Image 1: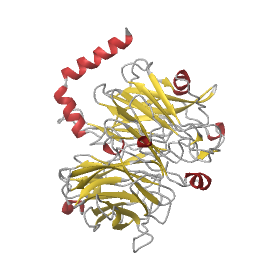
Image 2: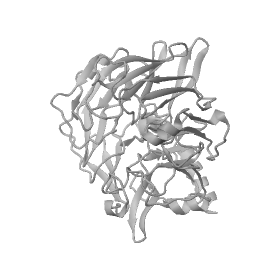
Image 3: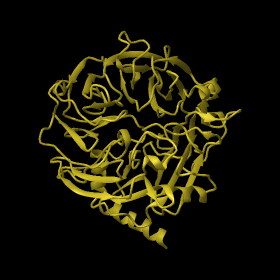
Length: 494
């Protein structure tokens, strides 16, 4: 009866506010990098190449939040007349709703005591609370997130659903992850598992990916938990066959609207392939086949295991590459081995399969790339110095992916000192692309480059930000760019 009531409530809400929902979905930032495909593309109509030169920090915007921030902020705009709400989560297990125009607090919700470093066998986040970026569902008008909670029985992971209007928990939530995974026949040790990756929503389910802690301690596996939005008792899960093989990438799973694609890290003790060092396609019911069309691993995956040079630090990049016949569905995997692997999205190729492989960076690649189209190819912006960049300290590399040879090549390089994850803004979805990147834990500045040729058009020389964490990214809204950092949020006006 409870599930029927919940489903009926969703139908009533959706039917009563369909125009508002359409507006909210177009104007809001509901998920990591703006969309389930994790492209990092944001439409900002007034942010032209010329206007980008006058971007500046808003000196009047000074929200106070409590705790260190690793997650990307989200943005909810319910109607055209509203300023919008920023949703920011912290490692102190605080959820803050902030007026996006003034920076004033709308509501704050504390969801439990974060986990202390002494409660874990290893790790590099202290305290440990909300690390993975949450996701907003427009139909239920709720934000869904995972938090590590310190309890009398030790660390636990719990998935919460909070109402956007006031932060109140939705009925039936939170869901204890270990209990849910174990009910599906899985094996989940909450102390050893960590949740760094963004959540995503597909077909009425919220999906939560898991890896381990920095240091690879204990018993963990790459795991994805799916929970029904209408009935949180309805759960499903998938885990790697090998121990380890965590899902670490900040963007989490990438989705084309039909499937989920995850990248897994190095496994431990595997003598035959067991889902580590891989790109895995999962159906919405979290079924994974052993058909070679549904997974990819480099031919030297055992060597990558031994070197901790895995694919799991960067999400799969979904691309529709222009071709003479239209577009070709592609997937780009980026590894800590400094290589890019181009795959056919309809046939991932199994072990050693794929369309092309190139060394594209002089350092390990981790973080979240951004993808857009310009000219005759798809462009992918990645953090790190490119192997073909004239300046080895470039910090930002943009690759061109084509349907004909060369399939992978360098487009341009940008000078950024830091480890942020790039995004792209356009005025209408394609025109005047700008690649933005934070010099996180480096120069701590915001940098902007023309997306077509890499010409620098913005760098705030006197607007250094404090409290930026590595791999941090920013978001674009119709009015501003926002960056979350420890204990605050920065707003860039234009």
